[in-house]
Image 1 (tube, rainbow, N blue to C red):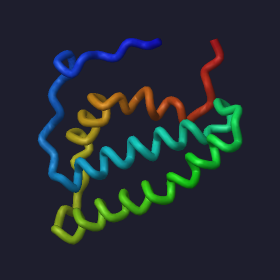
Image 2: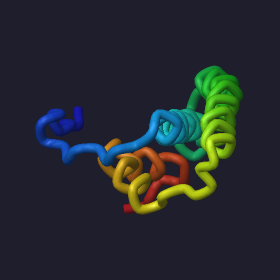
Image 3: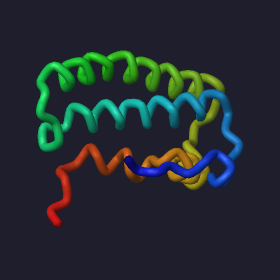
Image 4: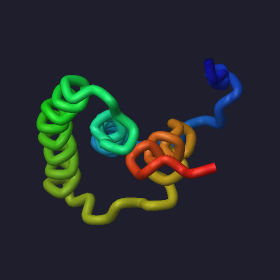
Length: 104
């Protein structure tokens, strides 16, 4: 089993608005589901089906968070800040599960 860093070992998350937190969290949750759906990694249609069904609610949450940001006049995504948050939350590994496995 892979070891994960303890919370004290992680760099601190950058300051984010609640809507930005929702965008980052929901984006990562959707990535996790996409990784479970990935036909190059899966072996179980039921597991993939359940993950695909879950994507619907994640897409709605992501839309709602972005709508809230837009309605508040937050017209820009602060990419550098959000990138730091994604890195702290293991976004690179999680995004890597969406593509085909690397051949070694």
